[in-house]
Length: 99
Image 1 (spheres, rainbow, N blue to C red):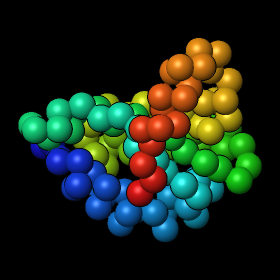
Image 2: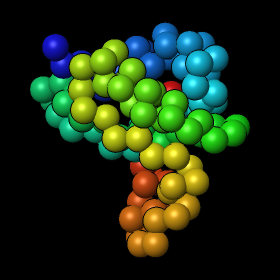
Image 3: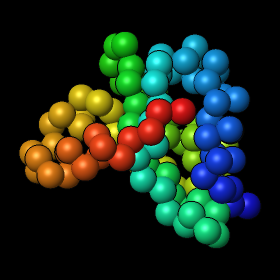
Image 4: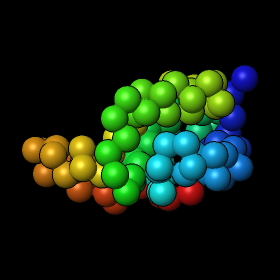
């Protein structure tokens, strides 16, 4: 099953309390997704955590992929700041929409 962008944001919002409590993720942004007219097939997320999440990072990626049934790429805000390509880094910052 594939979801529209709106449906993806609704699902993420419904899972926010669980995501915050289990993974310590306080903000989730979407900065890229594929398949706008045919349903989402891949979603790129930018996440903010109050502290490093370690191995929970992988668990979160697997959780989000299973809930949405899409491929998910996850980037932390620290990871974003480490992108050396300034145009790419700034492009992501401009595109991100927090849900």
